[in-house]
Image 1: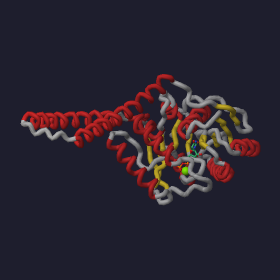
Image 2: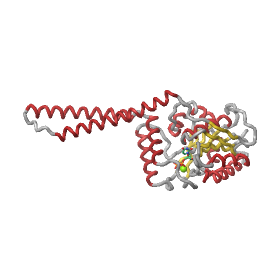
Image 3: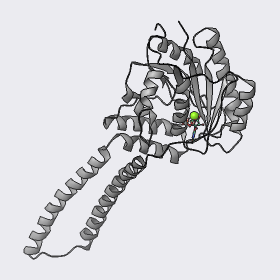
Image 4: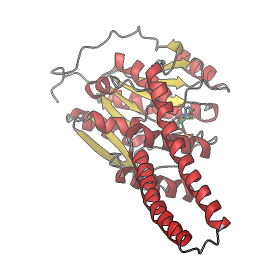
Amino acid sequence: MNSPVLRIVVPCYNEEEVFSDTARQLSALLTEMISENLVSDDSRLLFVDDGSKDDTWKLIEEENGRNKYVEGLKLSRNVGHQNALLAGLEEANRTSDCVISIDADLQDDISVIPAFIEKYWQGYEVVYGVRDSRDTDTVFKRKTALWFYSFMKRLGINLVQNHADFRLMGKQALTELLKYQESNVFLRGLVPLVGFPSEKIYYDRKERMAGESKYPFKKMIAFAMDGLTSFSVAPIRLVTLIGFISFLLSLLFGGYALTMKLLDHTAIGWTSLIVSIWTVGGLQLIGIGLIGEYIGKIFKEVKGRPKYAIEKTLYGNSPHLPVLPQREGQYSR
Ligand code: UDP
Ligand code: MG
């Protein structure tokens, strides 16, 4: 009965303030799990530098030099959290049996990681970390996240509530996930689509250790928009519906205006004219904008551009592990 090879993937963008602490805490946890034979000694931490402008990569290199459990992956430029994470997952999947992803600021409680592994041992391919409370997030972030989840749910998009990107995936599930070739990745939406037996583990979300959120309001909106339009055509249907209703209303209105004219009550209202121009014009603009959003997506998908480029890789002091065979039958789980 072999212990699985685990890789913990940590995307880092300008995280020099938290990196050392994060590396220390995760290494301590990893060595502890190795000593308990929960995971194999070939397990590693994989830090993905998402084109940071500060000293993050330098710190990763230094840590890799003195800590055999730390590996690094440097992307050629900033590609955003989801793509950076995907780069790490893809790289990690080549050499691991299971992979856990976690943010560099350790807002997610690392003490539940052994519980993730235990679930994996029990045969779960996907383990979702779910926040019990969001007390440490701002009221604004909490509210907007709540709206977002319920809105997505109404549109039939299956997301795990209060789950961010803190999760474990086994090789089997991850290999399937990596087959999704879309350019607009929204991992939270894709993982449930992949299927396989899954479990949730609950934890309290903490505050960011140091530094600032790398998700300012603008990025949050872009992220939510991406999640929505990558998974649903409901907004287009809504626009069509609104267009249809306003068309019906304008017919009624037209009939009324015509009757008035025939009855010679033509006090022609500039107001009604200008109002309808604005309303219809506005509706058209919304429609065009939304359709444009989708066309933009199609444009991106059609090009099939690579989502990231790896600049450098740093492996532990042990030689690079060969690609492991599928784990089926390897462990008695
Ligand atoms: N991140 C990244 N690339 C980016 C933005 C963020 O790799 O362009 C990483 C960041 O370093 C962190 C994670 O994504 O590990 C989540 O970011 P953050 O904690 O700032 O988001 P929040 O918790 O505020 O939503
Ligand atoms: Mg954070």
